[in-house]
Amino acid sequence: MSSQKLRNLRTYHFRNSRALDVARWNYQFEDGSVQDVLKALACYQNADGGFGHGLEPDIRTAESNPMSTWAATRILRECHLPDMSDRMIQKILSYLAASLREDRRWPATVEVTNEAPHAPWYHYVPGTEVWGWNPTIELSAFILTCAQRPSDLYSLAEQIIKEAMTAIMSPDFTPEGHELSNICEAGTMLLKVRSDLLPDNFFSRVIQLIDKLIVRDLSQYNNTDYIITPEFILNSPDSPYYPGISSIADQYCTYLEQSINESGYWDLNWTWGNDPLPPDSQREWRGVLIMQHMLYLQHFKPLP
Image 1: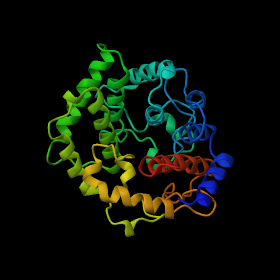
Image 2: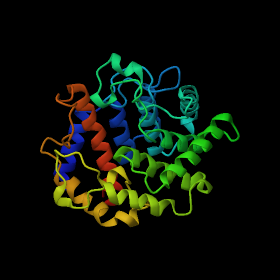
Image 3: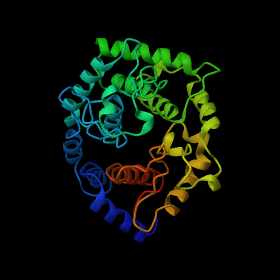
Image 4: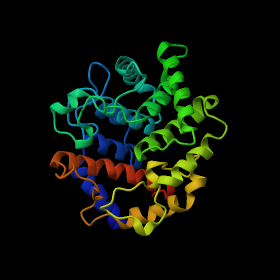
């Protein structure tokens, strides 16, 4: 990336992005502390341990919801689950224990979502709130990473993972892109903490699923089509999925570097159905994408 593009990104980010995403930038790329990230993230956590307040910018409710809580777990993992986050994590685990449905799923949408602006796909309609294994499998892997063993919640997470693995290994299993992203993240976590829960051919099976969804032709990448990119699957060459998509994963860096606009951010390639994103959501998503894309580039092409 040219030094001018990097300056434009940094300037836009510091002027416009959320304090949380600026703290993430400082921690990842400059001399910022993880404590600043955790302080900013804590502003989105409610008394019940769940997260809301627009942490997931397409869900504007202040109330706790599983998808915003899932987003918080990804940021914590980005920070390598520092010891000083233990209290925050314990509160998350309490929320997850209380919000798990009887069918051992966390819903993607909840009723309180409808009380504030939200993307149309998050609109709560009874009977449509469970989106396969998204975010259930990744939240379960988070529990197995962070919860005490033995505990009731830990045992529930084990049961969920075993059920998920049975489904995933079935030859007729066909995930949606975000569901596949959750599966990939869960597999990476479990490889570190509970590899015994992964079937012997889990990673080759997931590569088969990736092959059906990922777009490998770089010429098809643009700022208007919502497609499955390498970032849905990994953000580092160290990923167990990298050997299966190494070519497009490497080429994706070129696309990211070329697609930064002159103002210093990446354009969003989705809307809220027939409506544009509200200004707050659009601004916040730009900051989220800056961090997402820059972390990808940093892991593949470290900044000097």
